[in-house]
Image 1 (tube, each protein chain N blue to C red):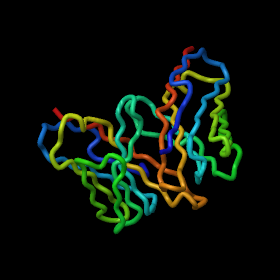
Image 2: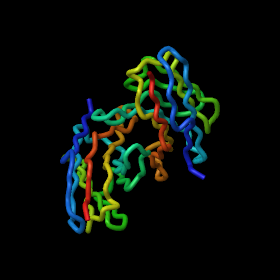
Image 3: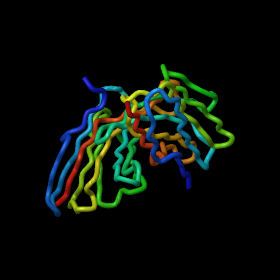
Image 4: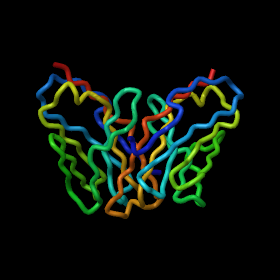
Amino acid sequence: DADVTQTPRNRITKTGKRIMLECSQTKGHDRMYWYRQDPGLGLRLIYYSFDVKDINKGEISDGYSVSRQAQAKFSLSLESAIPNQTALYFCATSDHPGQSSYEQYFGPGTRLTVT
Amino acid sequence: KQEVTQIPAALSVPEGENLVLNCSFTDSAIYNLQWFRQDPGKGLTSLLLIQSSQREQTSGRLNASLDKSSGRSTLYIAASQPGDSATYLCAPYLYNTDKLIFGTGTRLQVFP
């Protein structure tokens, strides 16, 4: 089984709809992240969480919210989807970068299209 | 603000060539640097991670070097194969912001 799973893998939704993307991990990591990827812009950080009670905004958090339901689960919500949120979304997990076990692991991605 | 630049942006080569992919970053205060591979429309696969105290890491035909003081890392791919075709991303992990910062990648195509 994959270490980091994301659901759904593909989603088409309409402008104004609320949508939730879910992420689960079996690595036992405290840190979880949500990124979006757009052609030509690379990966940009939306939100990140260093433990269940610690949630932080990334560089492009407007229009998004998150919930860390448990150490293993981190969900991303679009409260009212708009077309420029069409992108590939990735969840990732890691230990603290100072630890010898550190490595950032990525899920397979969710392709979201907002029409 | 940390900037990560990858050169070249795209590369098309016949199989068998030895390749050099370059990554430069402006903030040298990093924990480590990770190289990833991404196939079109797919997730990121970690290839190599170099700690800030290390100079290089090797995995099979891949070798990554790090010169933290000059803000550079290089990924060497030996004897390239068509299966190496993908986008390669470098990502240093910064002390100051406690985050991974991505370059925009080198898109590699290896043809038979």
